[in-house]
Length: 116
Image (spheres, rainbow, N blue to C red):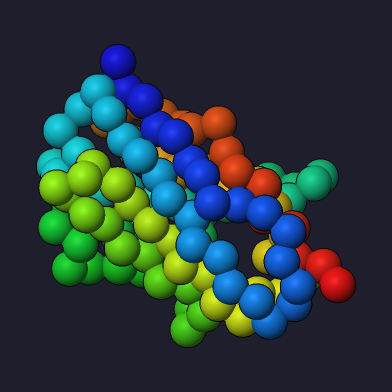
């Protein structure tokens, strides 16, 4: 079965950096677009970044473009999100996502808190 496991979250000061990882299993990782979403308290879950199957095409929400970088290692079945110049408004639970056969699959999420 599809399994997505996020890691790498934590508490960081404004201006700091974190690198999130998403380890995937149960499907052929290299054949699917992957996405990072985030959900802040009281808000809906929104997409942050998208990466194509081979990693050559990426897209970002405007609020993170230039600060976040999504990447993947298909040999390791893992997607990453490098987050730099973090701001308090980046505080959220971050989820990785794959859409497969019409269904959405999610990990358990990893908490990112940006605070001094």
